[in-house]
Length: 253
Image (cartoon, rainbow, N blue to C red):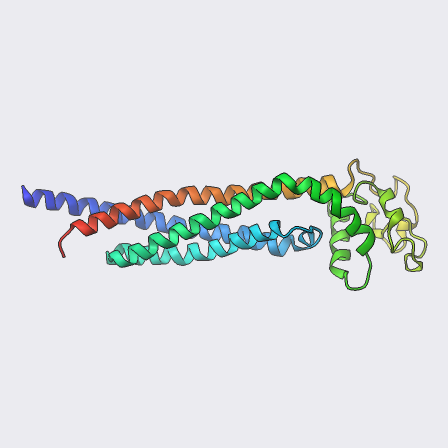
């Protein structure tokens, strides 16, 4: 009877090992996905980040990059701990899982909080940023971001094209008589901003604010969903780890 129980326990441990190994492989792939989302946010959309006064959006992305990197390292550690059957490594693995879990929940919470306050921030800051910093010395990154924003989202001005009437640059001699930046034009060419007729420039209801807000909100949903989704999956990994730890602790050396 004792031999049967021992075999049964060993069989259970082996099943747990392979379950945890399979989990770690998927977890490692998920870590790569999490890090990719964070890096994509910071690299591909960094111009738009410069238009936001709050750093919460960027912070969420940095947290995902950090969590993704730790996840990939943890996945390898988890495989080693599983096959070597070392309880000490399993403890370290569990603590790392817990830390990643908290990081990703934090990223999700930050994304949700920023989701709530985004509209107000854009209303307060985007117009001022576009009119006061566009084409100004030391703000070249803002200029690039605004030009990219207006061309990519086919919009002109924060609320409407008339916002550019208050632009420091438009009022200066450097604008050469332009009424809007050339990036407002449907077909951008040098000095095309001299004419602000709807046939020449983008006239979008809600201006660039509505377009940028929709883009960031959609992206925040992705950041939040990825962070919280992977965090929930990790709970399964922590349960498997605890079960294997208890199983190894019960077995004789």
